[in-house]
Each structure stands twice: as structure tokens, then as C-alpha cells.
Image (cartoon, rainbow, N blue to C red; front, side, top):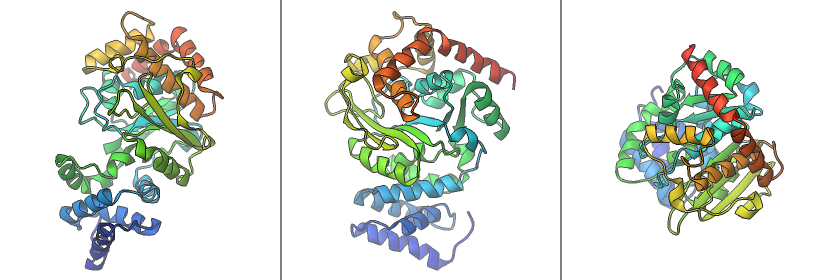
Length: 360
């Protein structure tokens, strides 16, 4: 991203020193720091020092939203703002290490089958046996397509997938620092940003976070990004575990933003008309195993997929419907989700997906 004078390089170091002293960065300074990270002329060591200092100090909602706003602006624009207005992204930060089935991806499919524009953004998973991109590829969804295909996919399927590496060229300059920190087991602000820097900028979001402590700050950051509505969620399927989505196992916590800003606290499954399940019901497997699970689910094969996983998918779909104001309660959303699957709309949609991409 060009070359900098030494004075600009000093600015990142100055910000690093502030962070090391426990001071949070005001919005403008955080935005500038985000921009500086994208410059090749700043050393990886300086980037590593900054990101580590920020993580050690603890990121604020203002710092996270400042970073998100910069990387949203720097992303390649797919030019689908008309879909983004009513659209949603459904994804989690990852990093929970729980190894569930691809719940949020399946939720996106059901929302699309119900007529909600789904503008999904993501990358390949490093930690999962079957990440979102892996599952979509196995279904025939092409990750790298011309920009015009995204519009056609939204018109035909109410769904498209923005493969992060194709839309965030600036990340090439940041990747070595991120990889070095990841090798140390150090989480950074980038572990939070993925779901927040969708290049299409949908106005609604259902976002899971890997730690309960991030629910409220990320909701606050979403408000700063002026999204219309959605939920930040986190699950604790068994004590001392974490899940970056809702489930019918253990506890679920949520905080709304935008139109749902008053919607917060611990979720009561009974309010959604669902029963608690065992955490093992949520587990996924390899790409082939998860594709088989998805089709068992779409075919209403109750023997092939556990009830707890089925209900957990419905719960998240309901949260998605609530986020785009398609329903007024989780229980209403669960009933609508069940109807779409049980009447074969999801299966029909999956067949349409295969036909759409095979015709490209």
C-alpha cells in the first residue's frame, strides 16, 4: 500500500507505546493505526508489537469499530448495496475450538431459501476439519467468481459468498504479522474483525463471538458502524467451554444492536419452544460427513441427524429472522424455519445452487 515517511512509521510506534501504558486509542488514531498496518514499508516487527500491545491492553468497542470501518472502506466493493439494505451476514469469529457442524452456514442457506438476501463473507478455516468455505465448495459454490456473478447469485438464489482473500488485498501486508502471532497462540483484533468487514456491508448481522466478554463491545461497535439490526451471540454448551453461535446445549447469551438494542441477556430455550440437548449432538466431522449431515437435515431424515443439532440450527435461523425483522419472536422464527425445511424448500434451494454454479 505504498511507502511512508519515517514520521508516519513513528506514529505507529507512538500508538504502541500508548497501548503499553494502558491507554486506549481515540477513534482517529485507531483508524490511522489500521491504515498503517497495511503499509509494506512498516516492518512486521512493528506490526506485531502494535497488535500484541493492543491485545494485552484489551481492545475497546471504539478501537474495534474504527478498525472495521477502515477495512470496510479498503475492501473491493462488489456493488450490491441494493441487496445489502435488506440483507444479512451470518457468521462467527471462530476460535472457540468446539468442532461443531457448520451451523451458521446452514442457517444462511435456510434464510436464503426463505427469501432473505444472504451476503456471506468468510475465509477457509485453519482450525476446523470442515470450514464454511470447504462446505460451500463441496456443494458446488465457486469461491472465486467475477463480480457480476455475485449480483446474479443474489438475484437467483438470495445468496452469495465473498471469499475474503479476493476482497481484502490490503491484508497481504498484514498476514505475516498475524501468522507470527497466531503461532504464539496470541489472539488479536483480527480474530474479531472477519465478520465485521464484509465488503458488501449488509445492514443486518447475526454474529457469534468466541468469548462472552465480547458480546456487548461488539454490539456497541455494530451500532457505531450504523447497522440496522442484529444480534451478537455466544454459547456455553458445557461449563468452561465456548461456542461462537447459539445452541440448545447449555447457556446462550446475546446482545442486540440497531432495532434490537433492547434485546439482551441470557436466552431461555423454552421461549423459543425448544428443549435442551447434549453438547455432543452439535459435533460435526469431515467435509463429506458434514455434506451428508446437511442433506439428511434437508431431507427431514430424523435418523441421520440428531434432534439437538436440528433444533440448534432452527434456533439460529430464528435469530436470523429476528435480526432482519421477518418475525417478532424467536418462537415464531423457529416455526418458520421448521416449515421451510419440512416443506422441502431448503432441499429445492440446494438443488438450485448446484444448477446455478454448474451453468457458469
